[in-house]
Figure 1 (tube, rainbow, N blue to C red):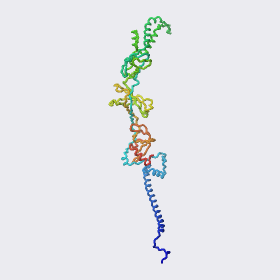
Figure 2 (figure 1 turned 135 degrees about the horizontal axis):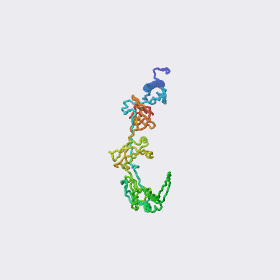
Figure 3 (figure 1 turned 30 degrees about the horizontal axis):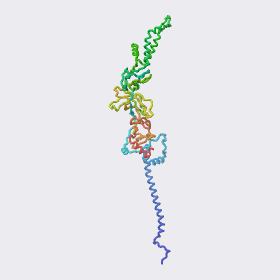
Figure 4 (figure 1 turned 180 degrees about the vertical axis):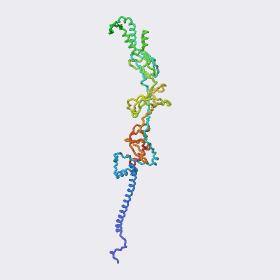
Length: 443
């Protein structure tokens, strides 16, 4: 009989003992695996970081950090090297060079990037606008009347009629004119008799040493005749017609209004039987041998437009004909609705091809002189600043802020930020800017 107190070494181990023994063994194996994984992670981070730092400071010989890494790596590299990201000046007090972004040549070809050098070139700005043909106000003549009366007859009886200088325009009946003529004829009739009766002899000393006395004979009726004659002249009755009144001894019933100039009847506010008063306008006559073209110029273009500049004017009605002109006057005020100013051109119009209210196309080539300029496509406008990407060589581009001036067609003046000869990207600038933002070069 065998005792149960003597354990058998070959007897199977109870399940409870097997479970309690497996737990420490598993813990030991898990700890070893964790240490191995931690060491691997450290190595996987340190090795790329070392290569990353080497790549960032690859261009240290040129003093420019190459932005081939992520923004966080670039910031950590600056902190590790003792360079503050906010620092913008070197020990010498000069500004650091622009941070660059790398665009390899093969990618430049795929992106369609082209470069051009900033240069001092003559800038010419072309201003194109729309104008309208107007009458020349200096060739407009108003015919008015200086006495009361009625329109007895119209010779220029419709608007647009051409009249020669001296041509009768209308006949005006005026009772006042008829009364003055009768008075004038009576004075002429009475002057031979009444004048002698009322003559006066006046003596006066000439004031010389010999004591000569001068004598003058004056008739009282002559001044009255002269006053009436002067009144007729102020009513624009010709001297020839006054002589006819004296010769015929008969008053004229109506006053003949004649055209003072040759031209076209532009306005005719009167008709047969219309009553007129002193100062009333009865005709506007305009000479269309020369006309104005009034063009609208935007306010940002006004500084470039000066009197005397040449312009080309064309009309859709005559596409094959070009009318040369010069700026005659720039009006001093702007339109509050369109924010434009009027510019006036004077054009000779002997064939009367240009008629008032016609529309015209106006083109002016303005010389702005020689200025440092770049293509307009090379500028990236962010709203707050203008940026260009300067070609730094070896596939690197640096963002640089510039200040621009006048624009001339496809070119833009650079006031500051660039020097003549510096190469900049002139196309695909937005793609370069996107690449720079992805790499944290620009914000």
